[in-house]
Length: 130
Image (tube, rainbow, N blue to C red):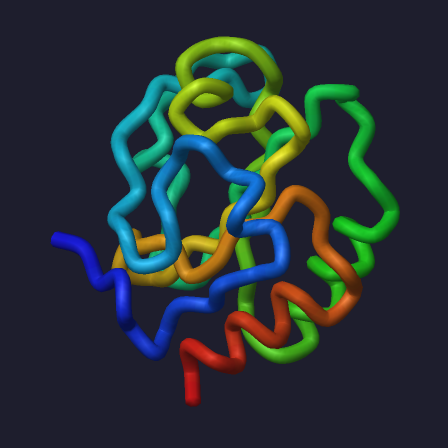
């Protein structure tokens, strides 16, 4: 089920740069992952709250991403999943230039970015909770 026109979705400045991956309002597809060199599946990493899925091809976590997560955590609990590069996730989620997905508690995408600014995650969460 997809909620493409949902008021819970945030269409970001980066939306037009994505060629693939679940768009805001769409359910997150199942996908094998590597986290901390361990094999797992995406749905095993989702929780009852908001989850940020992020992948950075350079392997370095940008300072802006860390600041955005800290800002969002001041308002609500937030799980952060940093996905190691390579594999099916990169293709399914169009990671070629980096990708940050905010997943709602119901398993649907709230928003996605190539890179986040300090308030991006908090603002998208606030929209979901309004």
